[in-house]
Length: 368
Image 1: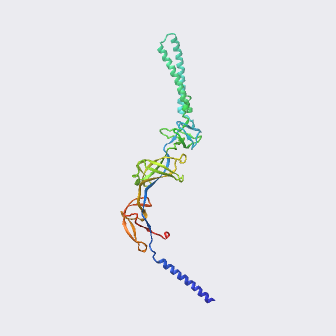
Image 2: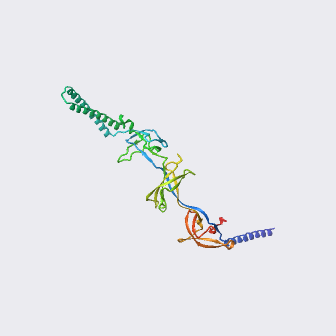
Image 3: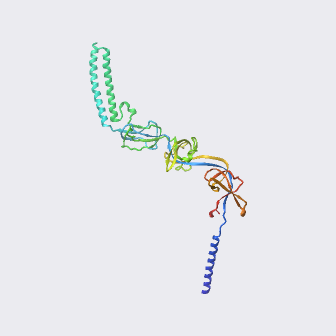
């Protein structure tokens, strides 16, 4: 039995050895080269470029106070619609002590002048009734009294404005009420009740109470490389896609191309703007990232082949036309004149017809 077992084991080892030898021999043999084959076709080719950018409202304004103070009321919040002139917030004035002192002093001086003007008027009136002064002199004294009365009113108004931010005479146009300067949607209210705000002046930009924009008039803003900007012109149609809105496209029209380049990551780029035709109310939000696709060139019904079948040699281009069939195939290297390419197919202007058969790149094992 032991003798037979040894023979069986030896036979198995021999079979494994021979099988391995045959497998390695076959693997070492050169495989026939097989190529992909293409037939030229008549098709339309478009050369497009994609510009990255974002969606912005054309009109976006920052609403700022006309006085410095503290926010006491906020009547709106981000996302609310407002009309031009509608109140957004209310501010309580923090009076400047220097201005307050001057306004109070003006009121006191105006009161003193009014008191003296009344005394002078009564004295002059008594003399006029006795025909001791002329009507012209009496009219001058009466005019002085009226001026003194108006100065008291003006001084009190000025004091109320400095102290309270509003006076009785201009309550409807109170600067303590912060109003929207345009109609639109409130994008942001960066302040809270109790925050201190300052007015805009030569030395300070002022505190932004709210940012308001007209979301019915949107634009796309992006940058395009200098190698492609020369093909753009105002009025070109664009297709806008927003990453946050899957399957939603918007039509736009190019309306601005910057005359000056800006450097971006080492490349010269030009800013472009396009007006979005329809925003499908409420779907687009300010600041969305977006891509704009522009057709730079287009040809119709031209002979085209896959670009992978083209051989580039210096400034020349060639294709291999298949002759014969089966094991008798031959490949003729033919120069061709190419046109535009969409990255997949390329236009052949001269050298190939739709009746020819073109050799493509070599097949790999997974292609079989």
